[in-house]
Amino acid sequence: MPDFIPSLHIDLERTWRGGQRQVYFLVRELRRDGHQAYLVSRKDSPLAKRLEDERLPVYTMRFFGEMDVMAARRIAKIAVKMGIRILHAHSSHAHTLALIAKRSVPGGRVIVHRRVDFKPGDDALNRWKYGSTDGYVAISNAIKDVLVDYGIDQKKITVIHSAVEPATPSDDARRKIREELGMDDETPLILNVAALVDHKGHKFLVGAMPKVLQHFPKAVCIVAGEGELKGDISKQIKSLDLQENLKLLGFRQDVPDLMAAADLYISTSHLEGLNSSLLDASMMGLPVVATRAGGQPEAVSDGVSGLLANNRDTEDIADKIIRILSNRELAAKLSRGGREYARQFTPQAMARQIAGFYERVAS
Image 1 (tube, rainbow, N blue to C red):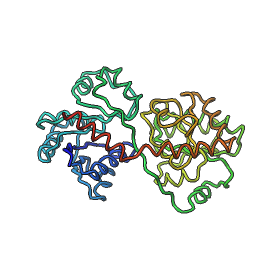
Image 2 (cartoon, rainbow, N blue to C red):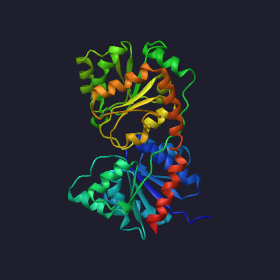
Image 3 (tube, helix red, strand yellow):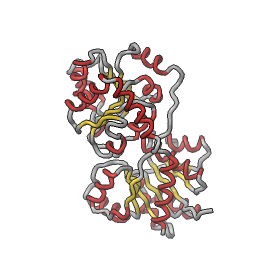
Image 4 (cartoon, rainbow, N blue to C red):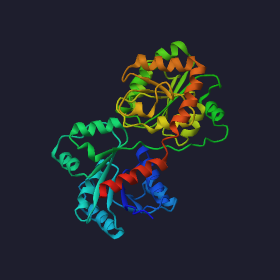
C-alpha cells in the first residue's frame, strides 16, 4: 500500500456554499482511496453534518476568530493524536489557525486552498501568513497568477480545478418549475445561481436584460441566491421595469430542478476563482454565457461549452445571450460540448491530484 500522507482539513464556515461542497468531495474521495483524512469544523455547520451523515470523521468545536489560540491548540492536539502531517486550510481564518497549530505539530506542513482571485492584503498579518505557508492549491491558473504576483514562489503552488458531480433533478422538474414561475415551455428561461454580493456582478446581468428583451420580450431570468445586495439589485430591477422578467428567488435547495427548467445559464461575475456552477450547468446540458473574469475562462470552453463575454460589458453579455437563444443549432452544440467538457472535473481526479501534492510538500 502506498505511504499515504494523513491530512486534517479545517473549514470554519457556517454556511454551505461552493467551497464547502469541494471540502466534502475532497475528504470523501481521500477516504475512499484509503487516505487518513479528517475534518475540523464548527459545531452544527452544514459541512460537518453532511460528513457525519455519511459517517466520515469530523471534529467539531467553537471558534472565536482567526487568532483563537485555544482553538489552534485543540487543532494541534487532534493532529498529533492522529499522526497528521498536512494541515489543509480551506478559508482565510482557517489559514491563520493552521499556522498557529503547526508550531505544535512535529513535521507538520500547512497547505492553503485558494478559491478567490483577488490579491491578499499587504498588511503584516497577511505577509506572515502567506510567507509561512508550505503549499497552495489554486483552483485556477488565474488564482496562481495572483499569488505569484503577490510574491509567492510558484514552486509552492499547484493548480487543481474544483470538481462537479452529475445532479439528478426531480421527476418532471422542467414542467413543475415553469408552472411555479407561470411560464409555458417555449418561453426562454435564463438561470443564475450566485450569492447576491458585489463580485458576482448581478448589476451587469440586470443591465443586459433590456437588450435581451428587445429580441425576446417574454424571456425570464431567475436568480437563485441571497446576499447583502438584494435591496440594491431589487431597486435596479424596478428602475428598469424588469419585475416581470427578472426574478430574485432567494436561496433554493432545488438547483438541479432549476437547471432542468432553464434554457441557458449565465454568470456575470467580475471576480471569480473558477465558478463550479458553470460546470454544474454544463454537466446538466445547459449552454452557458460567462464573463472573462478570473478563472471562468477555465470553466467554460469558449465555443465548445458556452460563450465568453467581455467582463463588466452589458452589451456584450446581452449579445451572447441573444446569440444562443436565437440559434437552436448552436445551443444544441454547446449543450453536447458542455457535457463532454465537464466530465474531466471529477472529485476522484481532484482528490488524487491533491494527494500527490501532499507527498511533494511533505517531502
